[in-house]
Length: 313
Image (cartoon, rainbow, N blue to C red; front, side, top):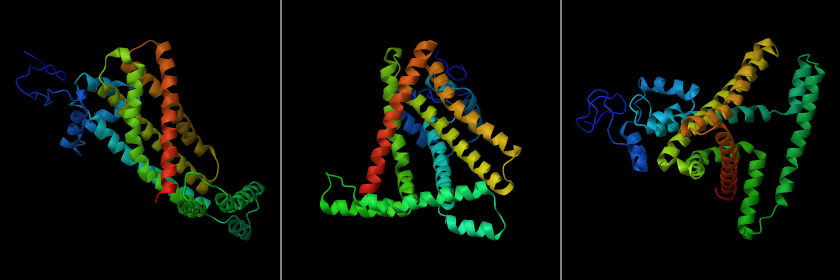
């Protein structure tokens, strides 16, 4: 009598009578994972916390649980990734709006207001001078753009390109928002490419492509989430510094930001070690190679996205 791979109860049909897990495996084709997501969209009950805790502190654990068919207690990887990516891009947009607001201030107006209020801190005034110089450099950007020619563009397209670049130079936020609007699509292109890299590097593991994709989904989900936390902590730190000035109360956030940055590469390395169960020398070597390939893939996709944003409205 076959047994459920999640709770070991005897199976008498397509679903386990004890835990409710489907006896079919979704890892052999893409329709299995997509169907699992569409079948249970939005059901974030107790499984959410059973998923988030190991996602943070147990690299590779959720991927292993999924491929050995212990899926019922956890949020499926595709749904988890989509949920986290939505949260991440909300945070990224908020960060862009905040940076744009801070940069758009006129240094001369700020200086006059500070002097009127009796602020004479030399360090602050020096930073304003540097900001004023940077704004002057930005004002020379349109002239640089007018001299920039792309040989593969027709004359009409070149003029449209220059007009868009001038508009983006006046308000860089437009280009950033344009890029963020296509970033989710970029990530969905990057995920199978990254899974293909794992497939090539661990071809002797005899794992299905979808198993590598599960690890890619979990890895990208946690990286997006950790970067979002770094941005949130940075914005909190900036607000506290603006309200109360520099002091020891900023140290905890600084330490947390540093620890999260440190945890990202350690997490990815440990996830590969846990999932593929190879020796440390092989794992570290493949970690550096896969990281380099990942940066090449992402840099290419980002460049394509920026060119697409500039060339086409």
